[in-house]
Image 1: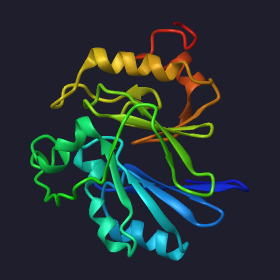
Image 2: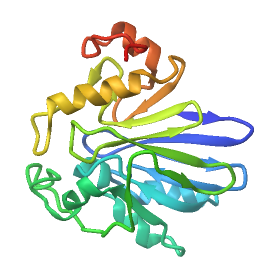
Image 3: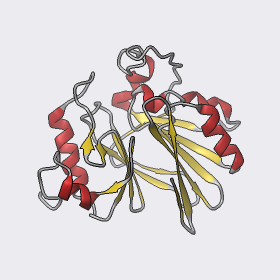
Length: 219
């Protein structure tokens, strides 16, 4: 997938055995961020190098290894972009039982985060690349979504026709439902880029997703 406008570009790279969506958002002046580098750092680096991007931040929407497994890419850039994760998921980066790498028999390299994200925080990445952090726990305690213009990078909170699991360490079904309600209040034409699978939009999920049993305008 590639979404190109006159101001920015969103590239989706599907990486790793769990087919994680890694997103690279860049401006016309080549400022850029990486969202969820789950695996295959050489492929992510290859794209960034080919496009001559200046990576400013690396965002983890949560701490599971399939979204953080290539955080080591931070060390491959000369400027060492800042690694960002919500403070409640920071422990996942150093615990292979929490991040599930141990369960899948995968090696995991701990890269310490530079920034602990908080709800409603705005991260300014330069040249109009401003991201609003939305704390959306449930899949993990520190799961976040990132709002960029009319787009929502939802991590493993919301998928097309589904939602994230809550039966993993730190999962909380009640918290997940509250998080779904939170994002359902967004504009219905908000395009959702999930952590796995195809993109969708808020209005379509309100109408069709069996896990969202409330109206998006409900308070």
